[in-house]
Image 1 (cartoon, rainbow, N blue to C red):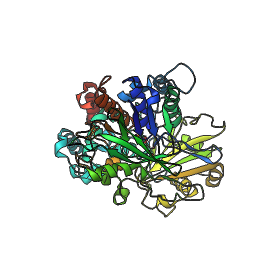
Image 2: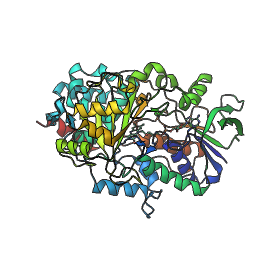
Image 3: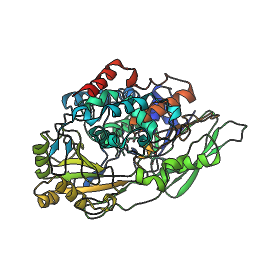
Image 4: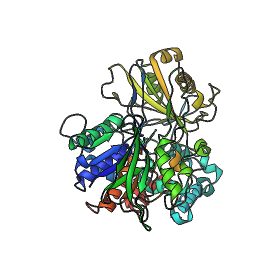
Length: 521
Ligand SMILES: Cc1cc2nc3c(=O)[nH]c(=O)nc-3n(C[C@H](O)[C@H](O)[C@H](O)COP(=O)(O)OP(=O)(O)OC[C@H]3O[C@@H](n4cnc5c(N)ncnc54)[C@H](O)[C@@H]3O)c2cc1C
């Protein structure tokens, strides 16, 4: 039995590991096809200290059940006997987030948490009403249909939307799922106390150790290999893959797939068509559409494969684009002023949100070093704009049209910090335009994402964030890990089923914690 995995992101790597660990498949029988030059997908690490790093920043919680079950098996990159999971939790116990100031206003002043995060009784009832509405009644509906305009001006919404990425026009279904999944975190929205992060960037914390575990087991990694198509055996009503066609280094190859082989396809990437700029150049948009091309092809030819265009088409980019930026600095001027303003030591504050900024900027200072091998005396911090198609207040341009220097200037002036020139001279700000990063929030119906195993499929599984898994939230590595585990379990009928999705609404402790927020003064 051979396994062909399309996509070398966290989901594809997790699938390979579950195949080996849960289903006893030999690593030598597994091939991972990755269109990019490196594994990792959305968990990337680009650049270097000299030219400026480029990476995402991510947060997690303890209920990433499939993820941590897997990472318990994987030794950490530190070379010690400790697992990735244990290293992660040890780091978070020793270095917990504690935001002393999360929101900054247009005058560069910190804004304290409001009682009930500004929610009125009616807002609270509207939240409960949505939480109690079955998903079957939420098809295609938007968050803004369930709340008064006032709700969207509360601190609750500001904190929620900048942590989780939701906009008023986004999916009510996904928002409901987030509420249930993140109920226990309600009191922590301001200080992020129980929110977890990786000891170093996610590429080195998760992707490298996974690859290092899979490689000696014989897994065949094919980087720069774009799977253009998969072929199906003629059959009545059943879907059996019999061919994988891929392109690599300009050459097209067709691989035969037997009836008892499995093919697991990642149907898209939040990082599709990301483009990277520099201090002096704005990112140049590119439109390859590669990560979702295979899904579009599959959905075009048969029913039951969902609606890829809902998530991946130019018309919805205004609701899904972020511009992120990673700043590598040899100076301390910015970090010193931010610490003095927020009272949080660098690396211990969670997010700082500049609430009046046109782009709705949020920043985080990583715990240093954020990159294994980062030169001492260098610090890395990160930020993003939730509304990058609006104009800045000091740089009167859309954020996605700005150079790194312009973004840095906007941030420094928003904060009313001194020493702009010195900060610019000691910093490299790398902007990264991500047109599809927030597309998992598009208002969807239940059939817009296909199931992990499409109806009638005998040896095809679909994995990643654009596959329907009941109850779970998609902007997470947990979601991709869950789809991978589920696909292996359903197709091979070996190993345990994935653990159930954590649901805060059935957890008395979480309910009580959230309730206390609503009755606080
Ligand atoms: C800025 C940012 C912030 C994030 N924050 C968080 C967070 O706070 N918490 C959290 O849990 N998660 C977060 N995530 C999400 C996390 O990165 C994703 O959940 C995860 O990377 C998804 O893994 P995946 O394997 O499903 O997809 P991806 O990582 O996107 O990988 C899919 C891969 O498949 C490849 N591929 C697709 N089609 C083909 C083909 N036909 N042929 C060959 N290769 C193909 C693509 O090139 C890509 O590399 C964040 C992501 C970003 C970008």
